[in-house]
Length: 143
Image (cartoon, rainbow, N blue to C red):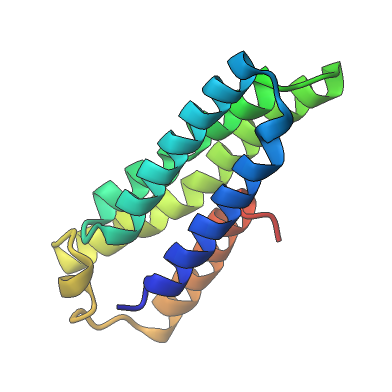
């Protein structure tokens, strides 16, 4: 399956962030572990779904625990502002992703990745998809 390398990288990064944060006090560590478990749950659901609707929902759900991690563990006012700006800009980038997924759904009349690949798209549509997906994914995973 094509998603296994991404799953392994996702798992390694999450485990490394947990190991790094083991120096927190017990209360902070428990809440941080809870948020990391939510991220892991949404990430695995994201990688194993075949529906573009669930893919988008789980992809956007990754933002919620990430926001709370930034907000709760912020030590300065700038960190709190960074949490709000991250939330705003990732939602803005998600609009591009939403446009592409809605367009694909209305053209292919299905929400399953396995059946979407059987639809023919023009080169213009492919370029449109690429630019919108680059912006949509690039905002959440800073490029």
